[in-house]
Image (cartoon, rainbow, N blue to C red; front, side, top):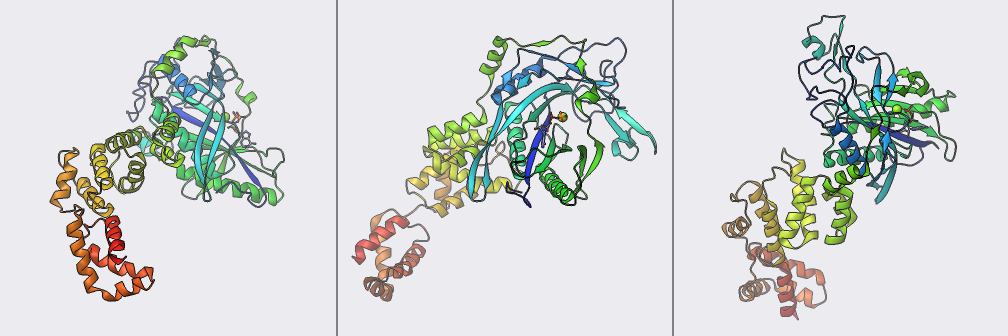
Length: 499
Ligand code: ADP
Ligand code: MG
């Protein structure tokens, strides 16, 4: 839903996202973080909380947090603190989770993106409150889950898999800045793009590497914030939208029926499309946070931050701004072309090859994306090289071929008829398919004369002032030329001949 009032209520949404950091080993131990291993084969003594073990900070996780902070223009705390968040859960063997509470490593920052609102493209900014480092818990596997079955415990039992315990997470918390499910999904997509672009998270939502909790409330415009309910662990953009839309309608119905909203944690069930309360929400006090005495404060010197900054690749929003400035592209094009590094690189190479950035952009957002959307192909294994697309665009603009002929050549290239992958394939295909436009004025004039002689009625009508009669002439001329006449040139010659 878009950000308009719903039955007179304004929607307020804030996100907490857990991005699993792409380190080889865990945040406080040397066990592997690889996904999908046999249960409990990747849990070491630290992850199992055996007595006498101590956590040791993984520098790679800290470095990724710094990269994230820089990517969203946040403040990187020079000194941050790890805390124990105490709660009992079978898959949390220590009885507490190591997290950051009072002083997180990343403070503030923002995520900006474009989104469609009605006919307009609008620019939105969601402020971040913080991003903090923490460890993931293990997994409880219940009797009828497939993993549970594979662990060999029978019906009526649960098993614990501690492979995920101690996996590094960055929890990214926004201000309650979003006003619709559309805006929430656009934010989540942008955040997903940032973490994968920077390379701190693989972004695999099915495997749980990027999971979002949506805090949702409704209020009368201008009134105080309503009580929120938190929808946990949304792991697809589609479910995110459905869950928020359902939750908003549910809350409004409750309030309209005279019930107060109780703060709660809820789960979305994709099968029913409904959210359902899991537990009433704990407050910070319930967790009895205190600084973890096993870990010293995390100290990050400015030199470290600057070194990380100097090693980071150009960020998507910086690149999009550069595309607007250097290639004179509209914001819309620049945003779409910077959806992934591979797409952006393909665009730049094509633009350079043909010297016509806007045409390159049109082709990529049109013909190219249409085909990418309908198949298994991505920019990483695209059959038409940027050099070929660039050459093709050059052949349109130097009038060698028409747009429709260019689409036929593109078809051929896509189907691997241009085996070398080089620009030369384009000219070879144009020749082989006989698609060259007739630019030779003499040849074209001969065709035009024939068509004029065969269609005296149209000629008369045109001369009598009926401009539409011209269409009746252009069609047959294009046909007689087998589509190879240059339409602009045909027009010009026709005008001359008809006076
Ligand atoms: P907790 O850590 O207990 O979940 P926080 O106060 O840190 O609570 O808020 C968590 C998230 O909930 C943040 O993203 C915040 O923006 C959002 N949030 C807070 N209040 C509201 C509200 N009334 N409606 C919607 N979202 C809210
Ligand atoms: Mg929270």
